[in-house]
Image 1 (spheres, helix red, strand yellow):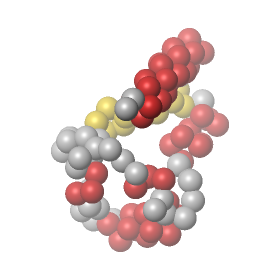
Image 2: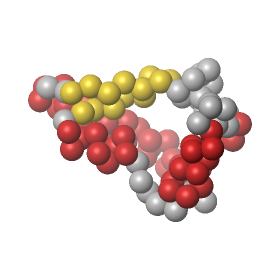
Image 3: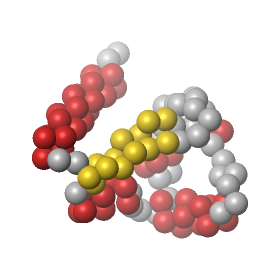
Image 4: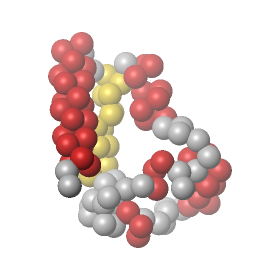
Length: 98
């Protein structure tokens, strides 16, 4: 299984591509994401000075996925990095709990 298929959200397994461009998304899912760790939002956004924040996701129960990209100031980037580090530490604690 690809890295993105290991999700704890209860509705993740119900996720389907229902948009008009479903065929292209299906190809992306099966031929790119399933075979690589390619993540353009994470890998390339920072190259241009952007940050990405996920506001809602379908697997977490939302009707749609919604994310925000913005060109962060140095102060915003620093705050975002601190928040990311906190979330990573919290995630590690959760998976290490018996």
